[in-house]
Length: 173
Image (tube, rainbow, N blue to C red):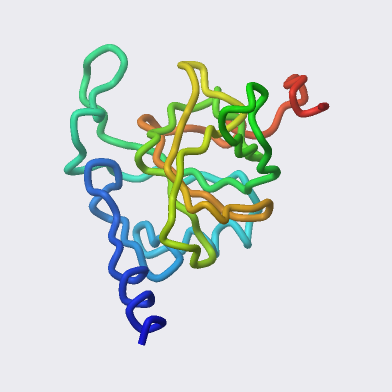
């Protein structure tokens, strides 16, 4: 019976509409955006990958840097490359194959894709860090290399802005 109860909890967990556009839906361990599977997209084209979608019914974060309303947002799917203790020993860093300084990720929108994980969650720091400080996201405690993460970026982003660059010295350690 506990398996049935867990199945129901994981499949009822919808997307937070403060972050995700109306045309996005959580279906099992996947997210469909305008009918397209984000897991399927990542498998077909590799990661990181991005889709630009109309951002209707978003919350306060829909206002751009200069104060104007944003009509579109981006969905980014990235692969976890490494999960390691942070340099200060206080937390855990999740290294992605996407350059977060090339976009403006929304921390509350980060979701695990492609597999079901435990209900237990904790705060992780996503790396490499975006331009505006560290990005901390609540993720399942069992996150591991090879997992897919999807998240919303406040403004549309081009693929060349989030592709991996070699100038992060931390990746060499």
